[in-house]
Every structure is written in structure tokens, then in C-alpha cells.
Length: 348
Image 1 (cartoon, rainbow, N blue to C red):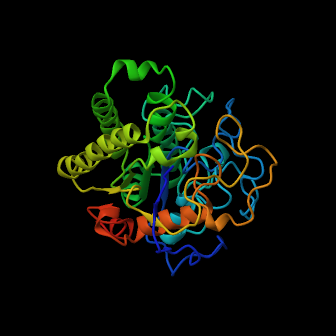
Image 2 (image 1 turned 90 degrees about the horizontal axis):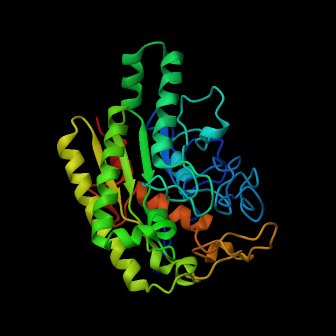
């Protein structure tokens, strides 16, 4: 959910092959990839939920080879592309569709989800980060039965890549909702501190479950998202300042985790730094309903690769290529801290 800065630089937009059945540049750099997050990463976990936050209908998936799958974009998500970049065979399957093939990882992300459990209730049911972590513990139990040894399973998990994108919905669909009870309880600085405190506990529990290579995505430029701009009259400057407070504390959390948790490495991906060069930065590419999502079976714009945003909230596939490519191989020191995913997967 980022409104990316205007730039003449188009990063990697057309250089990731759309054929997801082949690996990128040889062998996989990690044995598995576990994904936690919100609609930026959701691959279909919301499809069976009682929620308005669904994307299992056209025009979502119009450029995806399987059509609409529950991805909140016209094609690939950023985590689909990251999976390719680290050399895995295919997009990581959603937890909701998992049968037995879990060795390469699981995608737990849920549209509307947040750090706080109540975040996302605006739309209906969702799978909060707390619940996603519980689902991961279930998968670890199943992996242990497959591998046959708990110690060997932990060694396997230590080598995997983990990404977490959380926090955007805690602002869009919690703190900055009209008549938000949360906003009455906390100042922006207090809310950022509360979020980071809870987030720290959640990420530490992920470490306790065996994660050692973890990329944490910051919150993007929410003040540029059409849905936010059109909603409750709160200015872009207020929203931008609130996001800066969270992201600043998230960078400090990365330092703290790297200091406290042995044999692990945490990085921060700065979505406010990543640049695109698209012609249309603030308008969406499809007709939208009151929730900011594409109207079912509506006609999207034909020039989708020129748009930053598909609906009123979510990036186009073209933007996801830029986010993923820059997260993997940062083009500027401000894009990733202390380094990017390509260096993260090489750790330990």
C-alpha cells in the first residue's frame, strides 16, 4: 500500500519472467519461504472468509496466468516475485489451500490484517498476525512429522526466508477510521509505540519458532492512497507524520532484535523510499466500490503497467515488480536496512 515517488527509474519491471514454473538463475537460495502480512501479500487466504476484503474475482488476476486467485492485484504480488528472485519453483501457496506440500513454505497473509487483533474488522473476518503465527506453529508441527525429527526441523527452518508486511491496516482501517476508538485512546506517537511493542513480541515469537532470516516491511506512503485521501478529511501531512513515527520505531526495533536475538538477522524494507517511474501515481486503474476495491467484473484500464495503484489501495503488478526487485537488490542505501534480501538470504 504505497504511493511511490515519481522517478525516471523503472526497476526490473519487465525483467522477472512471468513463467512461474522455472527458477531464476539456478538453484534456490533458501529451502523455504514463509510469508506473513496483509493484502500486499495475500494469495487467497481470505477467499472463504466472511469478509468484504476479497479479490477472487475479475478484474483482480486479469494478468495472472491462473486468473483471480485472491491476490489483491492484477497479476503477481511482491512476495510472488520475491519467491522467484530467491530461486523457488513457484509462488508460495496460501495456508487456506495447503494440503501436504509445505516444504517450500506457506503464505499466511490475510487482506485487512494488522498487528492489532481488531484491525480489519471494518471489512469482516480476517486473519490477524496473532492468528497467522498460530497457523505457522501448526505448520511446524506438520513439518516435524514429515521430517521426522524436531531438531532437524528447526535446522531446516533456520535456513528459510521470512517476510512480514504489517502496520498499514492498523492505520488505514483502525487508527484513521472515522470515529476511531483507538485514536481517542492514543496520540500518534503513543499509537506507534504501542504497535511496535506488540509487534516486537510477535516477531520474537517467530524467532522462538525457528525464524532466523526475517525481512520486515515498513508502512508505505498511506497519505497518497486514493482511499485514504477520499475518506475522513484527515490531511496527508497528519497521516505521513504518523507513518514516519511507526517506521522510525521499526528501524530501531530491527537494531534491537539484531542485538538481542543470537544467530539471526533482521532487516527493514523502506517502502517510502522505493521509486517507480509510472505515469499515473495517485489514481486507480479500475472502477471501485465504497470500500476502495475494484467493482466485480468491471473493466480495468488497458495501460496497467503505467499505473502505480490498481484499485484505490493496492499496487499493480508493475509496482509489485519494482517493490520486489528493490527489496531484493536495493538500488539506494535508504531502500533497505542494514542490507537487502539478497544479502539476508546469504546469512549464516
